[in-house]
Amino acid sequence: MTTDKTAGLAGIIAGDTAIATVGKEGKGLTYRGYSIYDLAERATFEEVAYLLIYGRLPSETELAKYKNTLLELRGLPAPLRTVLEQIPAGTHPMDVMRTGCSMLGTLEPEGLARDQLTVANRLTACFTSMLLYWHHFQGSGKRIETITDDDSTAGQFLHLLHGKKPDELHRRAIDVSLILYAEHEFNASTFTARTITSTLPDFYSAVTGAIGALRGPLHGGANEAAMEVIERFNTPDQAESGILKLIAAKKLIMGFGHRIYKISDPRSDVIKAWAKKLAVAHGDEKLYPVSERIEQVMRREKNLFPNLDFYSASAYHLCGIPTPMFTPLFVVARITGWAAHIIEQRADNRLIRPNADYTGPDPRAFVPIGKR
Image 1: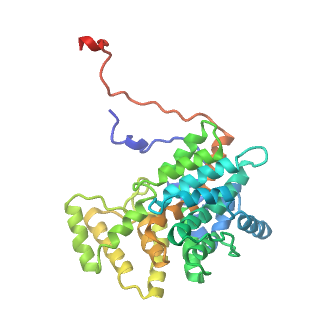
Image 2: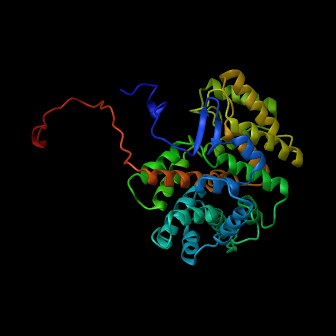
Image 3: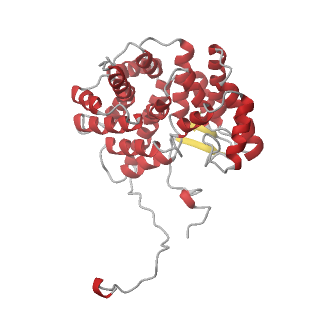
């Protein structure tokens, strides 16, 4: 029988990586050695994408060229648009991302003419396009143009979603959230991507599998689940009463605690500050105060801290993002981390194939069906 200590591979070192440190004493959360706080304050998502995929920060000239490359890769081939148009309106947007990725892999296969870096950049550039092309077609029948003149992924996402250029506060809030979500070591979706990669398939197969892993509420879907809880309450006092009832009923409250972090999630304070800025700008007297009270109750009653997903929920809502798009926006960010891990796994590959402790019956004789 698996012990509690190793259930879910908790505490097990499953490999080496030079991409990120998560919860390491004296290091905290870093991407290739750079503190997440420095990156969130001073970098752009495109700089972080370049850092993760290419292994170093770009120069000013390289960053300008990279942004232009991503801009040019935002268009969608006609067969992919046709497939997106066939996906029903009631489909979860994560299923749209999964299907779009798989379909693009058939149209633009990885090979001699399209190496892994090209595929990584293509997916980094066009996941927003897939999501919002489908969103607008199913919502209004409109076939939108997905190439805009916005030079940031955050700007393009908000532009396509709302049909106009975003203001700087909203654009930068989403930009920072993408940085925070970009990479997080051997989390479930990344480990899925590395496991698939270890069997030596194409790049798209690993990313499609990672999207499937991210879809679950115990991983990427937690931000959607957190929003559902927050929206139940109209006042902080109502939130306190409601959360106490959920705790008494032993209900799982999403957006709190973390498998790796024991004291706090270093990303949470950053996104909380942005949620507060957005709340002030919008004159919000509900979402942020309710969220803050829920945080206080969870600390007091359960000694649990908010993780990145919790305040991302209200930040995204205040930016006008529909709740079902929260996890797809996670994909828009995390494709950069997945890509880095796929590339790293390929560079020193060994098939990932752990053993298991058998807990079934002892060997026994087979009895033919007529004698059972």
